[in-house]
Length: 309
Image 1 (cartoon, rainbow, N blue to C red):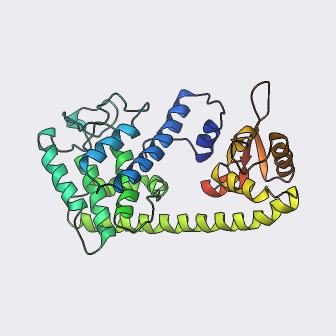
Image 2 (cartoon, rainbow, N blue to C red):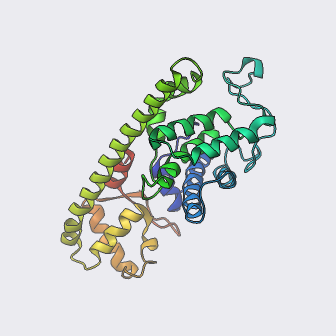
Image 3 (cartoon, helix red, strand yellow):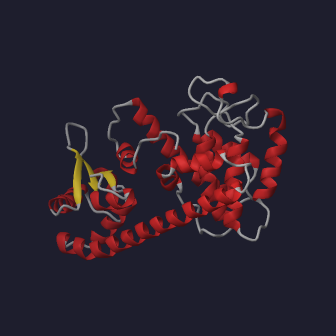
């Protein structure tokens, strides 16, 4: 929603040691890594105490670490007026002007109380929580990123998800214009009904997509267990497959760090057989001290929802 162009494959290649050419791509990759770290931090924090504004500030600090907006009061609520509009526009030309900073604390306190309220339908409550957060726009930058991370956190805290793993950004990006229009329309007659209808549709469609992907991944795992045993004739076939699902882009040496895996020569022999069978693909050839990087192609394509390799 904020221009991030990196894919899951880009992130995994970066973490496997592949070089990133453009600085803009590196920044996009770092944003995704930050998002993952923020989710993990929030999940740990929610085991100790309910969601609160201090955790919100902590997550903002993580999300904006070393990326776009890092110099815009990272980890702090804004103390100056902000607005949304075309680049270079003045506040008079703005498409949306959030509440003045003088009233920000009161708005956030009310928002936090509603977040923890017990409504008849928590999904409708979440639609309102998300919209209210975007209206308050409590930070100078990163409000969109933080507003989206609130979705899985709320679902997790309301015990609708066992873990905060629900990414709604795909649907919102595909329906960006409608998403923005519905938010900007709030305040007009029946606008909240239209917003809630849109948000519930977004949750429903994204949940269907996520469920289909999860089922496809489980089917792939079941199918390849037998296939890898046939290809490698090794007792390490199933542990190897588990590692491929855990880290689908990797250097061969990274596998040998696990206690269940054999020596590097044995690992390389198994990987060559998988590559010959088309299960693995070489992302980067070995050269000098640079190790070869492999990719588990079918899993990556499933996760991306399209052919990326």
